[in-house]
Image (tube, rainbow, N blue to C red; front, side, top):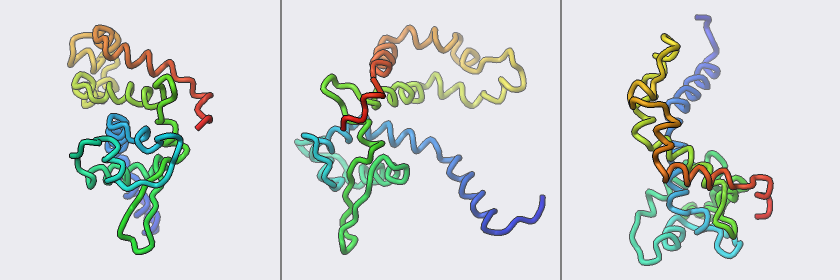
Length: 185
């Protein structure tokens, strides 16, 4: 291997670390969608910066939850432009608002948003059936007759998920979103 400058090597190491933890990004997105964070932030068309505690009180009006853990999710997704972070003058409080990307997760009058599409993909990710197949992806390269999903679950993915009405319903809702109409927010 040729000698590389230290800045290039440092950048490469950071990139591989980011790839290694990549699952934390979609899973954080999945969490804020399942918590209805975007809808809680967008009440009545307002996008005023809110603290994690304020967002949590909108999600759980009767109390409870952990604002610090919610803030961790918000900060993770801020680094991917889903939210904007606003820090007050003395740095003691962080508040968050929706970016243009985050606004795509706000439900319209029919209850639809890009959140359904995201959940559809994440629903598959949460499924043990798919998660068991991914570690065998290399076997499909070694032997093209190997289908990892079939190997661990005994049937093809479409057959497996087709037998689960909740998965079919979520997919239908996700496919109902008109992404060309998302600019109204």
